[in-house]
Each structure stands twice: as structure tokens, then as C-alpha cells.
Length: 311
Length: 125
Image (cartoon, rainbow over all chains, first blue to last red):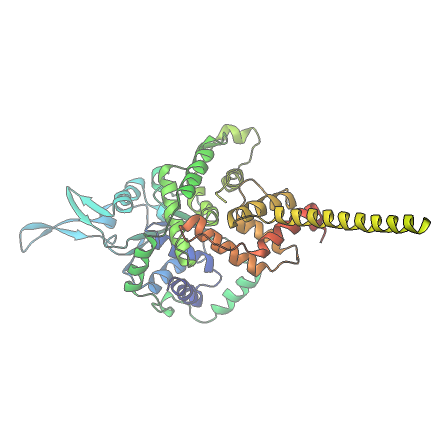
């Protein structure tokens, strides 16, 4: 069943979004791991279309918020509105009350709006004026941001970035893929062209199975060893946090499941580590100034190459 | 008299040949027995050492599958499908609390042996 969920989803997403099979798989991994994803890429690389199509294919509730500089937290989480009939304040749910929320261009909203999502992302609930409302399950935020803009944007603070289970970078497609995209777009392309291919029941069953995927003690030791090594690197100011390692192990379970295994292997960790950790690493500027490696991805790879996995 | 001496010499020679042949056969058999690891754990440990010898550029953090991708590129005379099957069983036991594989896959041992003998030589292929 696991393999078929993955295959069906990727086939369906590929009908609309060309050349984004790996990214679609990563979205599925994060959904099954109950995490949130940050899609990063320059304009025009199908970030929004991918998120919309993915949400449609998994038969879950979907909402979209276009983040802008004049937004208020109320526009996301909702708030109390005075009901003229009952003469009382009723809680009106905001767009966050859905299963998959597309937070488009999240870095365009001011910090107070970004922060409004923190509780939703971490505790899967929203609190407004002492009133706490749980979010539907499963709940996933797919946020997009453009890394090249500097005007009118508010970079996500470390605490917010750490809440995203994974960051998926969308690069420009290869030449042949780009050709296919242009050809495909000669007719109208819309996320509505994709059909729901994974039922909610199937998804819930999959979530239960992911929760029992085995992670051996040795794999846990390997993860801890690796996280400590990432923090010990003098070029790194902020290494892998305990939360990031927890995210990594959940992701690895989900990935193992869609690969048809009921246990995690070191390859799962090594494959997913760049997606889960690179966006959380902060490099030491003084080490960079001395001419060291400036690429967090390269530093992470070096660390992964140093730490011996259980064999 | 001369005939007797010649006969004795011939019989001594044949006895010598028989003794040397037996010693050689015993030595070869001993090497074979010594090379065959007693369980899958040892077989994979042997493979690990052979991989490190054959691919000195492999980092300390290499995984089985990463190393096997390197082996695939060699076009070595080993049934890699069988090795892959044995590896999956080993992984299921090692990481997934599955039943320990009882049989030692001959291809795993053969691959270890070939890599160990070939060392860096395989890179030229």
C-alpha cells in the first residue's frame, strides 16, 4: 500500500507539475511525518502550483493565504467577532483551520504575523485571548519564499525556521524538462487537472504505520553522534538542534515507510539530512572570513562523511 | 643391488610426492576454511574491510548502499542481485529487529574475496 500511495501521488502530481517528482515525494514524507515544509525558490519554478496540486491529490482540506506586509495575525488564526444577534463575541476561525495551509510568500508578512503561526506549527492549536482551539488533523503548512528578494521582506527568524521540518529548494529545471514544461503549458495547466488519488482513510492508515516504523538504538546513537558533530564544527554557529534531530528521525520513518520498509536505515538519515538540517545551520562569519567553506550543505556533507553509521 | 637402490629411491620419491601433495591440499583447505566466515555478521564485517581496501576514498561515514553503488560501477564478476538480497536481509536484522539470516550468502563472501584481492586494481576497469 505504501509504495502505491507514493507512486499514485507522484504520477498524479506529475500530470500537472513537470519534473518535480522528488519534491512531491518530500512533501509526502513531511505530511506522513506530521511536519511542515518550506519551499524555497526563485519566482516561476512551480512552488505554488506544486503545493496546490499536492494538496488536491491527498484529498485533504486546503487553504491558501497570500502573505502581504499589511497583514494582521487575525487574518491567519481568526479572532472574536461580535455577534449582533446573540450579543456575544463568537470565535471566527481563520484560514489556518484546514489540513494543508499554503502560506504563500511567507517572508512578505511582518514578524508578528509569522509568529502567529508558531503555536499552530508546534502545538497544533491556536490561542486567541485565552481561548484555545485545536487544529484539524493532519495539519501541515507548506510555506513558500523567494530567496533573492531583499526589499519589503522579513526574513524568518531562527525560531520560526526551526519549526519547519524540511526546506526544499526548487532550482531551475534541466533543459529537457524545461522544454517539456513549455510544451505542457501550451494548453491550460491547473492544479484542478489533478485528481485526488489518496483517500483520507488511506492517509490515516499510513500515518499510523509510520508511527510504528522501527528505529534501532544504534540509529539513535548515530543521530546523536551526528548532531553533536555538527555543533562541534568551528565553522558552525548554530548546529543541529535536538528538535531538528527529532524532525529528522520522524522524516526518516516516513521515508522508510514509503520505501516499503518498517525500519530506518542510515541511508534514510543521510538522504534526508540536507533537507531537514541545512536551513537551520548558521555559519560562523569569522570562520567564513578566514576563507573556510561558506556552503552549509557542503559542511553538512563533510560532517555526514565523518560520522560512522552502524554497519 | 643397483636395482634395489633404484626401487627404494623411486618409492621414496613417490612417498615424498604424496606427503607434499597432502600438505599442500591441507594448506589450501585450511585457507578456504579460514576465509569462510562463520555467520552473516562476520561475512559483512569481512565485506566492510574489503570495501575499505578496494575503495580507499570511501569516507568513514559510508553506508552499505553507497558502497554498493561503487561496486556496481566496477562490473565485477559477482551476482550483485544476490548480494543486494543478502544486504536487505542483513539490514532487516541489523536495523529492524528481524530474524537473523541463517545462511551466509556465497556471493557476499565471493565479493569480499574479489575486492580484497583486487584492491585498487578494480579502479582501472
